[in-house]
Image (cartoon, rainbow, N blue to C red):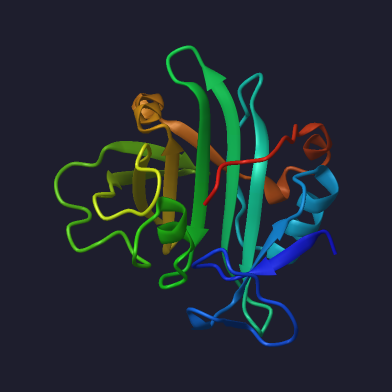
Length: 209
């Protein structure tokens, strides 16, 4: 097993046979790699099954996959996936982009965003969208998510929307990297790409989340 289990809402490990976090109680398990690498990513995709694993595609030159994870419950149902790709820009230096697709109530997107709750908050979705993302054949509007009550490092921008009935989150470090979304990004479910995944670059460590 190249993936290790933990709570999807915090960093605490979940060992043994009980799917229970000391802080959050009964939870599905988040499986993440010890080291981001092709073999661990292949295991991630097998674990996720038909649930989408989304990445900006194609990755820009010099960018790499620096983290990923999949949330599975006790009935082996996939509830969420997360990927992180990292690279550099002339304006921002190092940039980390986390993409989360999740069923409602899982809380993985909120954790990556540093929020105290599992959803984007009561004021979410008001006004015009901040950007649009291309997810497969869909054009998905995303709205800003307030991080005023976020924990830890506040130098991030968060947007969220809905794709195929699931929450879609983008968390970008630093906050100024949100300007990269001025052009419609393409997010692709990489589980169906096949042989080109062998050439996918990996690096680490990714950001703390």
